[in-house]
Image (cartoon, rainbow, N blue to C red; front, side):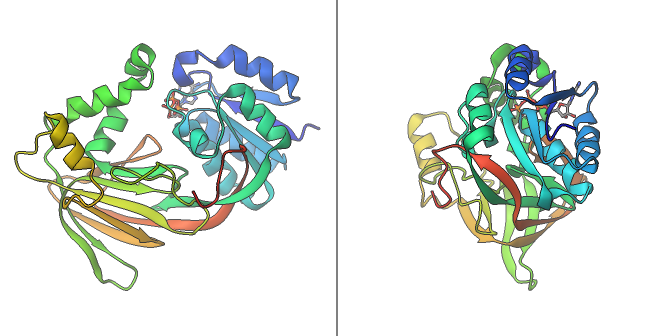
Length: 297
Ligand SMILES: Nc1ncnc2c1ncn2[C@@H]1O[C@H](COP(=O)(O)OP(=O)(O)OP(=O)(O)O)[C@@H](O)[C@H]1O
């Protein structure tokens, strides 16, 4: 019986890395199981975890990793399983955060990397490994089509964001902590909840992934917002900019007031809701990390 399986989404990044990933996996002694449809990496992960497989790697982008982690979690096997990150997607944002530089490096890390236990994000019972974002970025993340990604690679996200920016109006939101105290109320063009991820205006892009806290940035809507000049952009990104609010919290409750539920993106997958509870599940995901990974960046 095999104890190492790679669950591969052959459609990630338009299939660009599929052949190479299969070859590297075979050399590294991984059995490869490919998904054939949307959502199937979740089923494959659940089944592999049910078989008691010790190492389950996700081959694809953040969306694939999300499904694999959710499948293992729903099989009740997260505590016993090592999760591998094999960056065969377009953006591979999360892989970079745990120090994984590319496909070959991913298999080296699986072989010899340090194991760390990191936090997992939860949004209304759905998991996120990297981020849960609402507002402009969520719409853009969800509207970044496979076609755009095939043509533009990682630039596709920037193009999609600029397209959405012209029409996006802001979300009226009330945010409370666990005791019910008001954390922030207003109209936001962006609600960014990161697990290991920092956002605009902060030095570096990496946040502590093992502290049991979510890293939250709220971007307040301003009328006549213009990012047309370089000066405006640099003002926008300044650490002390008055339209940015930062919160570190283990759990937050969001209520959205509007005609329709607000759209959020969990590692690129859509969730529409007007009540959202986000929380950190401390150190429940074990994975091998690259040499550059620092628990406290
Ligand atoms: N065989 C398949 N055919 C079509 N869609 C699939 C298949 N397997 C998985 N999916 C879907 O692909 C999505 C995940 O794509 P993923 O994020 O891994 O790749 P990507 O978009 O290229 O990369 P990134 O997230 O890094 O930009 C999920 O919605 C998943 O359900």
